[in-house]
Length: 599
Image (cartoon, rainbow, N blue to C red; front, top):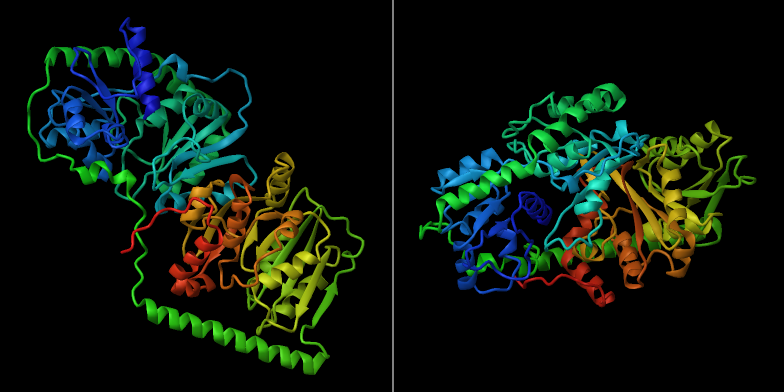
């Protein structure tokens, strides 16, 4: 929103007006034209009293930017009371504002010179760019592009927020940084937030077109005077992948499109012309009226941003706790019996057999991949096939079978016999030791400092290992590297789609175990915690790194595949999530845990 305000100031200044961006005080009735961009953010994020905010709103012209039907649009209307004119950047929103009884005016967004950072003839190194808030629909739509983009350079920047965005969050770009990113990109993909959403996001489109970045979007309303096929590509969701590849591969078509779009937003729709008309309309209407509206924001709405996170809804807490304790007790009892059986059969209560391919002993890997296997005989070959298909990397594969009760061990042995030239080690445990101990045992057997953690039901694309390895080389202080994952199976979408940010990590674990960890990091922190069982091992490790001031580096591209299932170990753990989370807060007290209510 600050960027839009800066554009308006630049356009007004080019018209000979005295214009300035003011962020440190409320508007005053001093004869100035007070334009408040995104009033629902400007006023809400301040600490002024409601009376002062109301007086400021009534002597201002709001410039609204939100989509009708969203809570933010409704909140914006509350700050339009008393204004002679309400401005919005989208024709659809203008009509919605008028239906609520306000005098509305559309500001047609266009370009300003400072926005254009494109340079003719400069190679664009980003093939596909996405910028936007994360929703389930957007994640599912982006996941369909993974098979097309793993060998290209995609930059998928998603974010979500429970607190105001400050600019420190990974993936979020503003101003010059955003324009330069767009100027490096060939195609911007635009996806709607929800199925019933056809909103044309003018600000994002103008920025892209000003920087000669082609736009492909789902069908939208309110884009006139810009035209589909003339200034941007419009495609239904099912057809979008094919149209995207066509646009990427046809330089002539893409260049013609971006030339027309650039001319439209930087010349025909240049923002100074629209701002001139808007200012004249405001001056014509004169002083604000004392209109009344049902859209009066209460103090509770104005202070929404400072509310703590709501506590999780956890019915039958005591029943959940007893059930969880029973599950732990059953697991512990089963493992004790296995140790006794192992002792009787092998003379030791922890027997592990080693099976190697001929290529393993003399291999000189740069990356180790560990695969933990427990009752995934039906999918483990898919995982192994994806790993050995990796390109531009010397690897070793270490599979640990955690005493599977299915045919997983023999399936892996058969795979090894069919891939004798691949350096593969199978550690076959006759004791079920659990995920943390299994990973630690496998990492102990590695011979490199870069260890890729894999579960037997997940996969990697051929470029994954090489790009994660390069990311660690490029950031020698990073403890691990991870990429966005394409979720498939029971539910489609994305996993690990956001960059390392400790406040987000304290809200929930959004980084999957499928990551490339430095062995030196694993050694320094004592490996995965054996007491943190049933699916929270990864979160515990990331929090341990965060408390130590370390960080992970994220590749904002879909390089791995995460299989989703109707039931999993995590769903069992969530029976006791509140207590487990409380334990993590106690274990890592210096981290910025979000405040939660007690009910």
